[in-house]
Length: 307
Image (cartoon, rainbow, N blue to C red; front, side, top):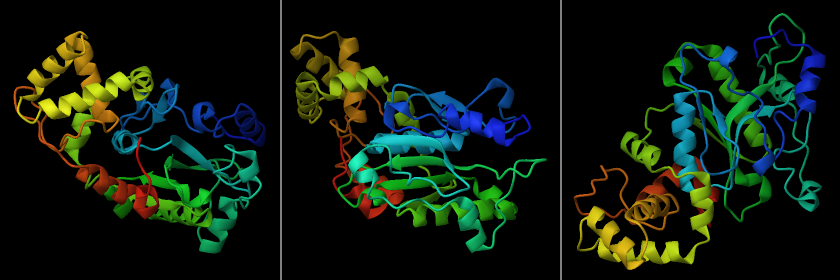
């Protein structure tokens, strides 16, 4: 936020709903705006099929991390989730009023910073406590305790972590915040991200309405089953053509079914390799899904995960 912050301006943002809401109603605390564009980082305004509105991802690293995690099958993504300075409702509130009453209040980041011996910080030129935020907060498809179903991901290049003590302090505060609220904290530096997998997901990513419509389509499920059978002996592109003919749909729709099928895990393909339509499809047997769910989500997220 480029303007000088004050308590009245802060209250205006809060009343407008920035940093609050769940599922379709969430509004990120920080948004991409023309006047607030970054000269050093690629900002991405996009939809990842998880809600009707687009996500405000403030760096290329955030986009890659959000894209990969969205494919893993979470229930929700809240980007730029504020870690309010004062005590506030638990980050899992807002979904079920009966459960809300059972969740402990979240400590404010001022208290967490004080206990850690770390300066919290204020908005420049003011005495107003700064509103920190976590880059990506995912709600996981797990039957574990409700408060443990959140994973907080901080996206920070390794070079910045090594150079800046303040960056390390901020990450420590985010770790403590996640722990205080029963969640899992992950630092993503980008060093180990699977580039070919992310490149494939980038071009396979369906429109939200495509994923919503085909998720509940029995025809789509049957198409994917047939395609899996055909690809045992037929190159991928030819198999999509044959499956399209069998279901009496245009070939263009068949390739849409293929893209959505991969996104919904109905088509098992190794996305760590180039996807070449003229060649045989390599199966993955769920190994890549399992690996990256374990990496980001831990054991809680792996349990009962799926579409």
